[in-house]
Image 1 (cartoon, protein in one colour):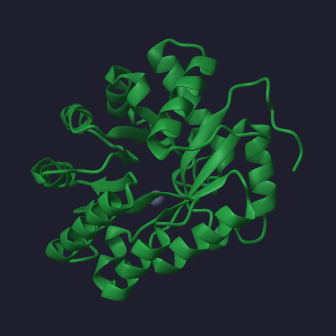
Image 2: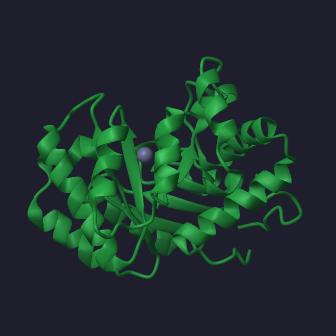
Image 3: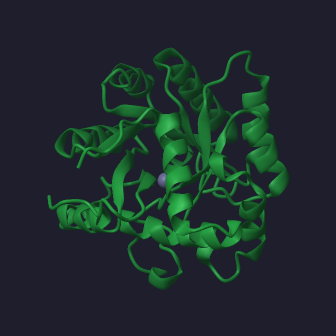
Length: 267
Ligand SMILES: [Zn+2]
């Protein structure tokens, strides 16, 4: 690895599916481009047991990659109890920084809602046991997700990832102690409503993510997304908050380090 861009802004991509087959041929080059763009830390996120184990393996291979272990609501119908137990065992590994992604998806509804909810609740329990935050996927399910969290006597910290509104849900999530993270969707021409939401939230509760290989920001839209492009999301946030990019980088990176208890990059 070459030296990072240590004088420029430093970003954290808090949500990258680095184990996706679309990265299998050039992951080294992708992470090198990320470093050159100031993205010195990446959280590799699992969506089932196999991809969670892959995320953990990547965190062992690359010092600046950390792992989140979870079963996506799309996969919730095929999950077996031993899978969840295995996630719980792996959650104690030092480079595991979160449980997830987990949550509810009433848009695609690939798992029956009661099944998805049971798996989501298992993740919340595991997160409390392991003292880790949760990365929450919530699509057209904000009320249900937030109702579940609000009903818990004790709830983990976490982030509502790839947030898509509305403002009232964001405010409620903040009240429950969650952070909100934005992807390249924030840069899309038809996302004016989402930009208005992002502009009204406290910047120190916002995280940056790519959700790569999905959701590439506007200049790269339709192509494979990668961690380097998280800087584009940061530029949009900087415009919305009328702040220099370096401030957005520092504030969002500090929040990500706090939530996921990440060390400062040494590179
Ligand atoms: Zn994701």
